[in-house]
Amino acid sequence: MSYELKSARYLAAEYLRKILEPGDRAIDATMGNGHDTALLCSLVGSEGHVDAFDVQPAALESTKSLLEAEGLLSRASLYLLGHEHMAEAVNSPVKAIVFNLGWLPGGDHGVTTRVKTTLSAIEQAMDLLQPMGMLLVCVYPGHPEGERERDAVTELFSALSPRDFNVLEHRFPNAGPGAPLCFAVQKQRKA
Ligand SMILES: C[S@@+](CC[C@H](N)C(=O)[O-])C[C@H]1O[C@@H](n2cnc3c(N)ncnc32)[C@H](O)[C@@H]1O
Image (cartoon, rainbow, N blue to C red; front, side, top):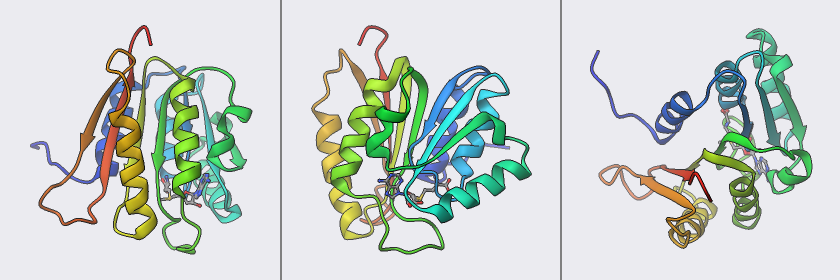
């Protein structure tokens, strides 16, 4: 089958599949319904570990059920904690970190990621990355807070020194102004 360009989330998952190996550590900064956490758990294998964060009990419950159903629960620590506290919970370097910003699909749209905490969490994530580790950030600018997140994240990543990080922005220019974007940020070997 030929390669097909799909969504921002799909691109993020492609990078995760490329970079993660059995035994690695990874973080899901926005657990939601657990699809990214489950993918990370499957990629790091039984020797690896995933730390996952969300502020909504419903997200933890969905993720726990999904991981249980897939036999992956022992590979993850699920935190009912904002990702802006990530560095308090995780103190060893990780190979990959994924953010899927916005709200819980099927949940309350009022509980969305917010620019201030998103930026704080991304700063912590960049510190936690091991050399050559990768950060994936999917942004949804189709709502006002998402638009602010897109602008702030773009500004933050644009100011990084290429000596420290390589940054690639993926966007779908013909899909309308609200189309999701995916940023792939890789820490340099000697950052
Ligand atoms: C688009 S969903 C994530 C989808 C998820 N990755 C999946 O695979 O199903 C965004 C999630 O971010 C969560 N969220 C909002 N603010 C947060 C914060 N400060 N820290 C961590 N998660 C947060 C929301 O509760 C929501 O579940």
